Image 1 (cartoon, rainbow, N blue to C red):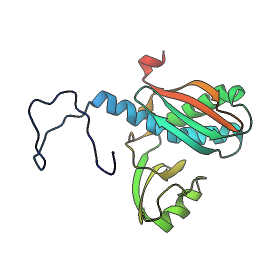
Image 2 (cartoon, helix red, strand yellow):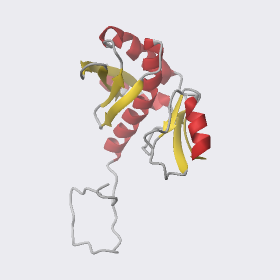
Image 3 (spheres, rainbow, N blue to C red):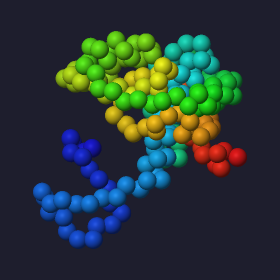
Image 4 (cartoon, one colour):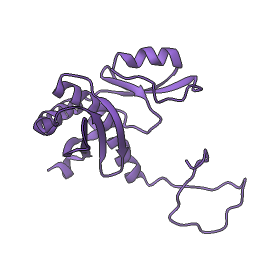
Length: 184
């Protein structure tokens, strides 16, 4: 989105498009699916990180791309020694094949709902009355407008790529959803 306007990027435009004219677009499915898998992986990583550290971690930044994702976390120690445990926990969740559900809730109901998963709506603009919640069933739920797979089993394998210190009290963890062929 640019200044409140939805923008689409095209590889090729065959003829001029005028305002109010309809255009046909085709989704690059393999890229979209990779984004969906990495996005859902970012959600399950919140729980994998909580399990590995023994405490919910505040996410202070994130990015999702087709080949990897990252979370920046408020954490005073190094996540380095925990990387194998984090990856193992993430893959354990993948194997649970949990459903990923999307629901729309009134803001006050959504605020109460996500608290059970150590989340809040603090970054959501106050004028948003109805909130789209994405939940990995019984595991993690938060406000989210992104695209996701239908269940954690679709992710394949989670590979933790690296950990970086972003300065005092902020750790970055990069990871990727890999198909079984890629993971080998």
